[in-house]
View 1 (cartoon, rainbow, N blue to C red):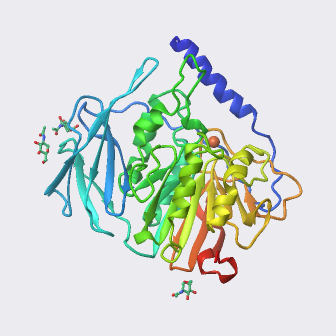
View 2 (view 1 turned 30 degrees about the vertical axis):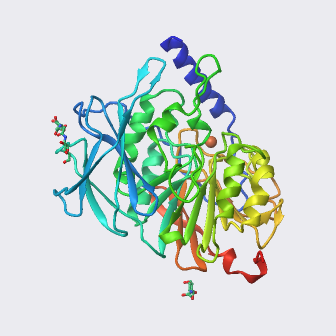
View 3 (view 1 turned 90 degrees about the horizontal axis):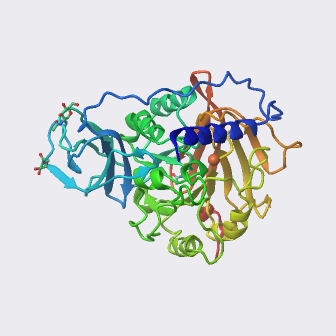
Length: 438
Ligand SMILES: *[C@@H]1O[C@H](CO)[C@@H](O)[C@H](O)[C@H]1NC(C)=O
Ligand SMILES: *[C@@H]1O[C@H](CO)[C@@H](O)[C@H](O)[C@H]1NC(C)=O
Ligand SMILES: *[C@@H]1O[C@H](CO)[C@@H](O)[C@H](O)[C@H]1NC(C)=O
Ligand SMILES: [Fe+2]
């Protein structure tokens, strides 16, 4: 396919999405008048030397290791040197380097190396590809509660993304969870690189754990580009082969945080999820292995919401919900975070379409700031299960303070200030005798 044809396709795809967005706001629960959309940032050009590490991000592997991922334009060693004092790197690990091609685009050298064992709640300094010009640092998550998560979906790379990232950086956290739709590259591969550069200041400093959205698929038509998730899998490798229940697929996996007090399940909305599929069988195994005597909170992330009263993407999560909701309910999963819909919505505890005190809290947090804009039209009347809904950009925070209590807050990007617009305490279903499985 020619560049022109590719460009047309990209334009057509973008226009198609933009046109599907409804024009006016009918939101009934919030009277906030949001500011205008902001343009996509221009980060396509960079001046890095060929061996300079760029797009550095980290992800947790097991309880005491970290995967460092980065890219160099030219060949460079897949080596991470690290230590607990700035400028001193007594330890090192060497991992792997891969590349991929997508039509005429050829990626840089994509490196990753797993480092550890690491101490919990400890700052490590590191450098990549033996390069002396850039030192990074991160802090490992704690070994026990409390633990603080940021949850943000559909991030993209616009002026609003920048605002969201600034708000995320302004308050401390241990780990970021992203329920899909990262770069909005939409087939134009250099946008994956610019996204990597945009998020690097945050993603090199705290583990970013992600799962895929529809914008990660990048499969055009079967004959033109049949292999889905090519860029996503190459650039955002997650710990699917680590932990108690390895999944074998980068498109869904799980991990423990805070010494197993929190179990996080990353589901894949864009790979098989029906009964009998590999993902469904893995989810059953994963849930069966959880010991709720030790694991206070279980949360799941998914891209297309299973509960949604926004007119955008209505019912897109229904088939997956039909296949998997009973499994999550049976395991007393505490909360399900979704993206996809570019707005915020919090439901009450629900199961089977109805309020249920033993069902998970469902939250749509697809409002990170991408270029498709907000989804402003809601179904009317607001369903009884929908507790709060608002079409604004922002991010969420889940602070698990102890074995029974977690605090959820949603911070809207009020112009350039992060304002808490919704919050509640969540109590662990494992600590609720009325929801006991015995
Ligand atoms: C990179 O650093 C590692 C660890 O310090 C060292 O073993 C290796 O020889 C270095 N490689 C190059 C190419 O300098
Ligand atoms: C590291 O980065 C600097 C600055 O971009 C560059 O000049 C140098 O060649 C790179 N390589 C090493 C081994 O430091
Ligand atoms: C857990 O945290 C909640 C909220 O701060 C508090 O009310 C409760 O007493 C705490 N439980 C324990 C056992 O400390
Ligand atoms: Fe999406």
